[in-house]
Amino acid sequence: MGSVTEHNSEVKAAMGRMSRRSFLWAGIAALGAYSGVHWLASRQEDWGTPWPFRRALEANQGVGMDLYRKGQLSPTYLKADLTELRQNGDVGLEEENFDPSEWTLTVNNVFGKDEPTVLTLEDIKKLPVTTQITEMFCIEGWSMKVEWKGVRFADFAAKYPPSSRTSNPPDVNNKPEELVRYVSMMTPNEAYYVGLDMASALHPQTLLCYEMNGEPLSLDHGAPLRLAIPVKYGVKNLKRIGSITYTDQRPTDYWAEQGYDWYAGL
Ligand SMILES: Nc1nc2c(c(=O)[nH]1)N[C@H]1C(S)=C(S)[C@@H](COP(=O)(O)O)O[C@H]1N2
Ligand SMILES: [Mo]
Image (cartoon, rainbow, N blue to C red; front, side, top):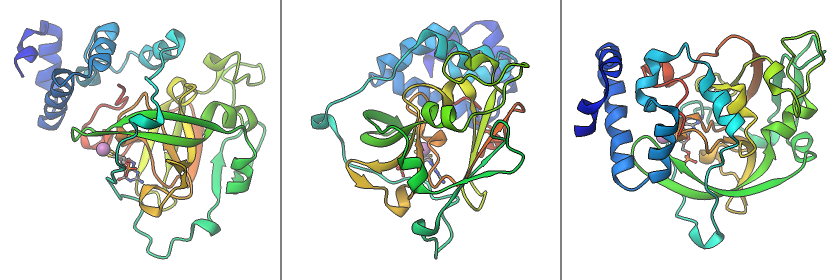
């Protein structure tokens, strides 16, 4: 934690306002940087403020959009780099008789629709397929490199668009800044939920996934559909997506409610 003492007084003041738990995150981030996650470390420098301290500066909505504008990509890997799968976190996966073949996805606030849009896995699979190998970092201090297969959230949003905040119709590909600013995703039982800034949701590496390492998702990895969002920590990689809601109000978030950074960005 030596580096913490070197931060400027603004950050120190912010630290004073943080919970012990957030402080723990700072330690974990420092540990990550120490163990050679240089990309992570440099990303923090780019943004000026290490992310665990950003909670006090959340008025700065520019963080996510910045990432989007710079076009920064998470590193991608080869099949030879894949690491063993790990399972972690089962909040929202409690239903014992959950049947993925009966599953549907509810999309709220699709542009021009008064009623929720209800989709099946077949509907999702009709969208362009993307495969990528990226690393998922759990805040507990481990990571895994996974081959994810699914559809870009950006492709999904182009087909099922959020509303615009202007009088123009939404243009997901060309004018993402005009869209409502957030996306909420929840498990079917609403026990686990994540809030995402639109820029991170539309990042080209953010995928709605139905396969990991060439196999359909298992139940404990979030079958039949989960989020892979390598610009965020593991906590945001929601398993078993039941609903997607476009909104201009910053959504509630399971771990942010426990005092963690809302962005949880890498
Ligand atoms: N529904 C749900 N999704 C979740 C969690 C959870 O508890 N419930 N935990 C998160 C955390 S903390 C991590 S690190 C990853 C782990 O994904 P994995 O089980 O595929 O390794 O899932 C994320 N998604
Ligand atoms: Mo995690």
